[in-house]
Image: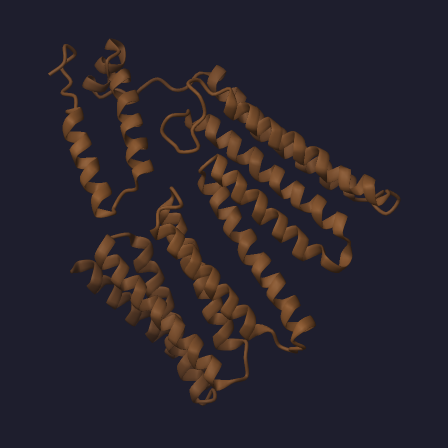
Length: 351
């Protein structure tokens, strides 16, 4: 019991608990380090008599001062103005600019924003850590926004530089590379989500181009669905291996890409075999969602299981019956599937 009347957690017990969680795989070593850092900083706050008294009496901690808030807001506003300025300059006089000027129009703001993000990170008190816990959350958010916007502008510069024939592939590839590098520097949910979108779109773009230009396929849906399925499996494996600090976001991102891949296989091809593979993939997502919820109690798994099950049943029935149920029957099937999936979800959650 401290002098202020607050009973502080035992640091040794915290270490034992964190070691058990790391050993069981429910936490990564980096996450455990972040918890220890946050615990140490919380202990320092509680050691301050005014703060301890406020917590003991139930009153809230003081709100951040304007001196703390303004730099963060300024970072967001500055990044928004830079991106808006680049968009405005692209407008009426774009065609009159040379190729080099067009590239610099995106490359210079990109370099400035990325450089500003790196400088803000390097000036963090106590040094910069890519993982959360040792650096103020506001500073980390500003760095993440600056790096994300800078990566977008850098990708646009790359797309302009390569020309119209490969613009989309160049933009998505450059964005994926820059955002993955940004995530290694600053572990952030925003950057991870942006990186996943860039990787998925880049995979789609490259696969469609390769299927049509190299293989002569008139309908690249099968190739795109398989490629996105590989991305989803890879992202899920990386999340399970602890490559991402935001494991739940990584899990939901992998589920989303996998759902899109399965839908493309189910409805994008005229082959019944391919459609069956898509329906099986959707069924696998539903089973994975329910099993994942039972094991982890993460509601995201349950949502995926319900959505996938409510999608695959009416689609498969309508496809294999050739639409014999008509519009009314289709609506009835969809409704019954959603209700059934909801009942299964509630049953799993109850158990």
